[in-house]
Length: 242
Ligand code: F6R
Image 1 (cartoon, rainbow, N blue to C red):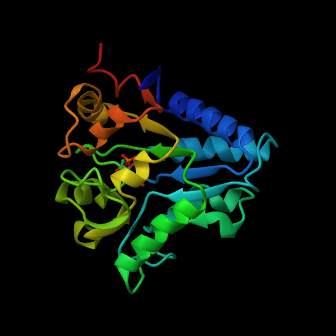
Image 2 (cartoon, rainbow, N blue to C red):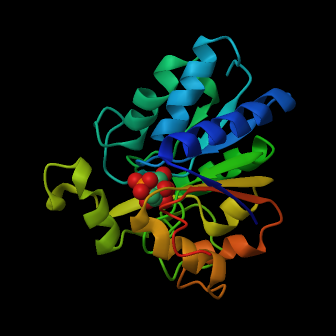
């Protein structure tokens, strides 16, 4: 794993955007795995800026998001569909047919999971997967205990994850109890993984990821076994690492 420390969140986001831009420029039809949450918002702002400055086009880019809540419509402001439109897709030239997120409103959720996994494979797999990390070590919504062999699946969200994400909802009770997420194996198949970590509240998780045992109780630990992981983390997130 290659670790790059930045002074702060803004510099982490800028560096991450330069890396994603290089990948997009180098590959003919890049397939990018995307994350939501607070961590990648700055990265998306930089990508939009680069698009407006004519440094980059998304016309040939395809995207697959890590996850989506079960039971939220695309128009729901807390859905990850809505998040992606708001923070990236509405502002760049990506064709809508190239955008993929799991459908958390599907009648048959298991079928939706299989179909999502197939779509990733049919696109030729993910060239670069952007990840954030949960304080409990989740990547995507793969909560502690998720099998390292898992592919896209329905997950019951941990209470701690629902509490962490309650800041976006009117009340804790409105936070969905389930999500569809790419599995650990789906994530690990990506050619490259770019993990972004910011803030002291993630310092313990980052330390465990770097120095802990590889164990399903801490899903992100699997990244130790991937051939091509880059971690861009700010000083606060790396404060436990000497
Ligand atoms: C989001 C996702 C999650 C988040 C993680 C950190 O698509 O899959 O794993 O990356 O919960 O969230 P933030 O960035 O809000 O701290």
